[in-house]
Length: 293
Image (cartoon, rainbow, N blue to C red; front, side, top):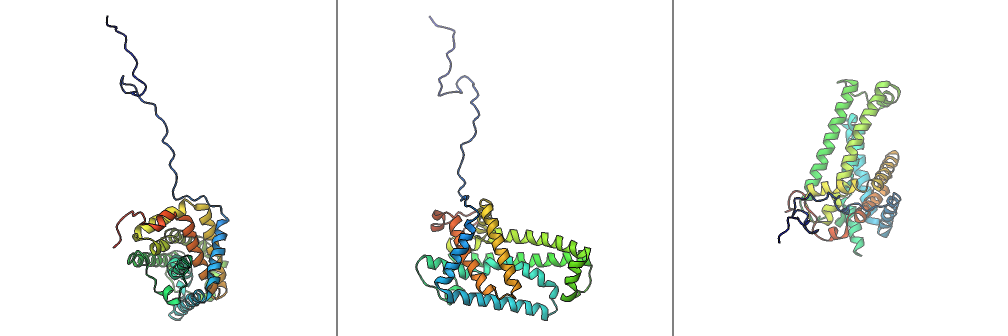
């Protein structure tokens, strides 16, 4: 005799009787770019950069002398050509193109890891694994630098009008002793900090990545920003260290760059090696946009 009673569906088939499955939260996925490094790690990178400088000081110091000479030459040209209004923005813009200039220092640190010595010529004529994508990166950073220079001129015009630049002697008192100067410092400093933060995020690991890995420039920019964002605490400390040492170098008439710039360049390489996963450094990097040539 048949029964009219309906048996419940088996537990492994919740849809058999039209039952709605339970909604459960997704399983947590590990963040592959978060290294969970303490803030003090940034000082360890600085010590590692100093060790790289001491390991073979001659090429690094010669590199620093070149950066010092280039900086003095740029300042001399700006003053000599009557472009002194661009001096302060140019100094701030150095933070934008600094990682690009330090490419040879990354190369020396990379070769030191492999137990090889590096000559100054090898530091000046680096052959990145990504080929011409490194050149594309340079074009992007230089474009960002020029954009910041134009923005700085527009900010000055908004507060002081379209008037001739009063000169370095008068501009300091105007900036420090007048309400308009205070407002200009506040707005210009905020905008400059945003430019510097963006440039730092996209280039601090992007440039070393193009040297070590076979990827494209746009992918390196995006991955660098993701690495900074997912390790924000230690990178904020590292950015503060870079800023303070750069200011000290400027106050010494750029002489401090002879030592400070090589140390920061070597240390940035160690920061990249600490945050970028080893399996991604050794193999082909993920490509977010295009394949490198």
